[in-house]
Image 1 (cartoon, rainbow, N blue to C red):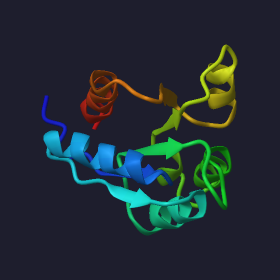
Image 2 (cartoon, rainbow, N blue to C red):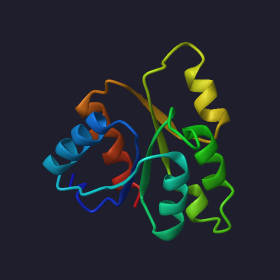
Image 3 (tube, rainbow, N blue to C red):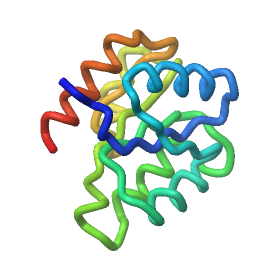
Length: 128
């Protein structure tokens, strides 16, 4: 399945993770937009339309949960439903319920498996 047409916003503050995401997504011909913190993610989201947001949970200014809450409460009800997948290293038995309670659609544990990410992107692309 061709996923190159996906418009993705990545909210991530770690430069090494940003570099990794750029290289990985380039293999699939995806050029994402990046936000360095939660506030920037919300501002970027409001200025453009995306098929998916990959949201780091632990970021400065606004964390991933706070940024997701603002996105879910956006004035545009269609944009407010943009799928958001959390990127987190903090995976324990409560993570799934925390993710769902915060309004996120899914999560990927860091360090993540490239094939797992691609599968999730294919699901998003299939729904377009």
